[in-house]
Length: 317
Image (cartoon, rainbow, N blue to C red; front, side, top):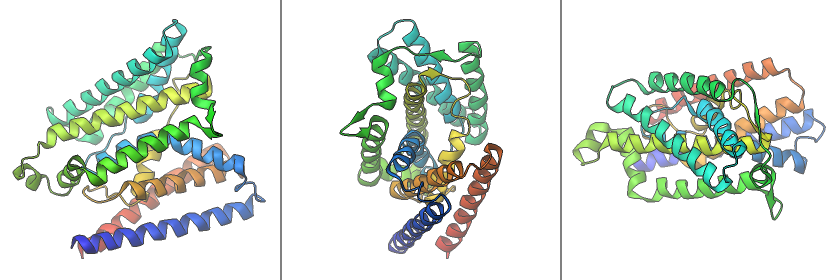
């Protein structure tokens, strides 16, 4: 059975790669080769790196049978908080860790609602999404907080060997978390809890403790993403990262990770991320109106969920 599932997953990833290539060809033809220019590809990679940090966390969560809808708000709150701390003269090397730790506490709060209060993760994190979006506005009085710290600003726009720093950070973290998920006992436990919680409990796995770690990890990554985005925009903006969580979930599900848990890979999520960000980028180059882009993103999410339903039907046969 396991061999069969691996074979199906491999075929699905090949299909996604083919779909990504076809999409790139279509957008290249429609945009007069603007789509495949080096600068545009770099733009796609930078956008993917910021969303990708949340994709890492959502991949773990969905495989474990959970979901988090608060990363967009956590990212915006974190961007405002780090900008506020920097504007008060705090060192960047202190401000960013403080914000990431705050993000960890937010994730821990989400896990308490799910584990102890027995809220559905959708409802618990929906509440967090509203709370921290509101707190982001309260923290800055509804106005952007501009950043003057030049070292911090390099985090979002600087390059090493002509590779954007956000892309380097994402690639490094993706590799680390990808190896942990695929090659370690912790990763196997994530799959076991998502695939069969009762069997995991009988095997001695503390599902609540594991889920708490995953919620903490996801919020910490969202907080780091918020810092990077604030650096790119030279300011903390309470309206930033709207829809980030939906983009991340779309990418993860599109990449083959089952909403029901227990199935999927980080490699598939990465392909789903590039498809989604490439799709969004193509629409922008074509000057599609912003509200139609929102509609298109919603349709892409429906398509991803439809593919998830079809995949689950195949796996159950």
